[in-house]
Amino acid sequence: MEQFVQQLINGLSLGTIYALIALGYTMVYGILRLINFAHGDVYMVGAFFGYYVARFISTQLGYVPSMLNFFLVLAASMAGCAILGFVIERGAYRPLRRAPRLNALITAIGISLLLENLGQLVFGADPKDFPNLIPRTTLSIGVLTVSNIQLIVVATAIVLTLGLEFIVHRTKMGTAMRAVSFSGDAAGLMGININRVISFTFVLGSALAAAAGILVGLYNPKIDPLMGIMPGLKAFVAAVLGGIGNIPGAILGGLIMGTAETFTVGYLSSTYRDAITFVILVAVLLFRPTGLLGTPARSKF
Image 1 (cartoon, rainbow, N blue to C red):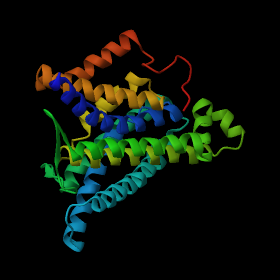
Image 2 (image 1 turned 180 degrees about the horizontal axis):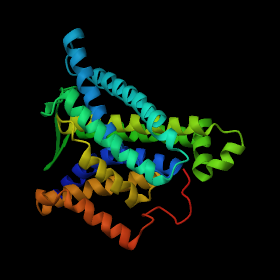
Image 3 (image 1 turned 135 degrees about the horizontal axis):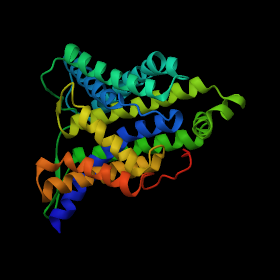
């Protein structure tokens, strides 16, 4: 029983990271009906933004690990990736807005490969140790062990998710996002600036991916230019599992993916930790193609 609870704790902390990445997939799909396969590589860029910002703070300003440094690095990385998301949407996807969907899909794969290869060229192909932003401690409750990093990862993901929920359901831009997800043409006729809404969606999703990159740097402090490939695929499966285009579904799917992975490692073998992703994907496509919270009709935010 103790091992079960320990694996559940580990799975939930990992699942919140997948959920943050999956939110970007599901928001873009809800607006554009586009699978943005470059999203996992934006997550990678976010981790490297954090790496270099932390190094700059360390060498130029000097610091000891603290929550303040964590928040500074997190904010800088999210801002950097928000700009990157805007540039990708404006330069790569907007010109193809009226083109066949296959064109945009191929472009997304091309952007993904471009970011991966540019990452190896600019950042170097060798893995890097992510800076220690927060002093690491552990809390023991009986035979269970919870690190402060796990608590910070979960708490940060919850705060960001609540912030997203507020934006989507309590702001004018969020109302516009939900309108465009229902019908872009009708929203345009009502005076909504479709281009602005789509750009904002990419900015928001990219910022959340950057946050996931920083949290992964804390959780597993090894980053490299290809680190976005497998987590990106897992987050995509999480979005499909929950019902792509559905924000609560992306969160639920991410949590399920994280717990499934940790239970696979804990009870079977680490060899199968990636295979379980594709087993879940096949099962969803066979038995519940619309996802756990999805519906055959167009999903609304």
